[in-house]
Length: 366
Image (cartoon, rainbow, N blue to C red):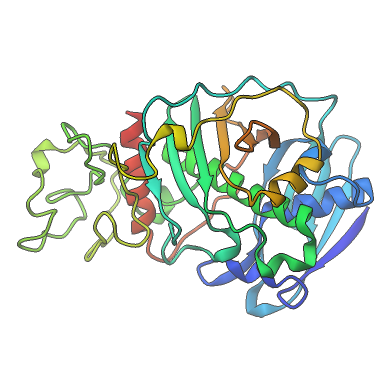
C-alpha cells in the first residue's frame, strides 16, 4: 500500500508524546496515515471506518532518528509494521455505518474525579501542550466509563503542518486513546503496567474510606510500604487493619516520598459547589445518531474543541468501543473493537502517580 517516514524534524508535535523520555508516534497518527493512503487523503480518521483495532507496540523515535512505517493490506485486515517488520497495529475496514448505542444519561451530580492540565504519569508518559487537556470523570463502572475533556488548545502551533481538520483529528484521537487506556487500567486488567511483571502491588479501594478519600490501599503497614513519616497525611490515616489488600506474592514498590493528593499528577475530588463543578456547565451531550462526517472535525476545530465527551464501553470479550462527541452531541471519533491488551508496556521509572490515579478510579467503580 505505501510507506511513511516519521521524525521530529518533519513532525515536531511528536516531541509532546514521550514514553520515559523517548518520543513515540501516537497510535491515532499511525491510523490517520493509513487512512490517507486508503482514501487518498480525503477522509479524516473517524470517517474511515476502521474496526477491530489491535495495538501491538508503540513506534519509538529513539535518539531522534526517523522511523519508517510500512502499511499493507491483507485479504482481511490493514496492517502497519516498522522498518524491521515488527507489527505496530492492525485493523479491519468497518462495513456499513455504525449505529451508536445512544448517549450516556445526563449527569445529575458533579464529576467524581478530575485531573487538571498537567502530567498524569510522572516519569512514564509525558504529554506536552499538544496532547493535554483537563479531564473529568463522570462515571466509571464495569460496563461504562464517561469522561469529559476541557481546556483543549484550539490548534497547537506544533500541529500547524497538519491543517485544522487533521490537527483536530490527531488531538481528539489521542485523548480518546488516553480515556480508553485509563478505562482498561482502572479496571485492573489488560496491560502489564504497572503491576505483574513490573513488581507492583495492585491498589484496591479503601475499606470504610470517606467519600473524599482517594488514597490507594498502599497505606501505612501495607506490604512494601515504608513507615509513614511522623505528621504526614498517611501517618494520620487509617491503619493497615482497616485496609483491603491484595496478596500478590511480589514485593511492592518503593514509594518513599509518594506525592500527596493535589500534587502534580494526582487526581482530585471535585467537591460539590465549586466553580466548574455544576453539571449544567458540562452536560453530557444528547446524540442525534448521525454518522461520523469528516466535516465535524472542522466544526470542532473552529469552536476550540470545547466540551468533548468520551464514552468507553467494554464488550464481553474485553474489547472496547470508544465514542467521542462534541458538546452539542455531534459524533466525532468511534472505534469499534479496540484491543489495547497486546501492547504490554514495561515501565522502569516511577509509576506512583499512575498507581494513585488507578486507585481512585477503582474506588469510584466500587
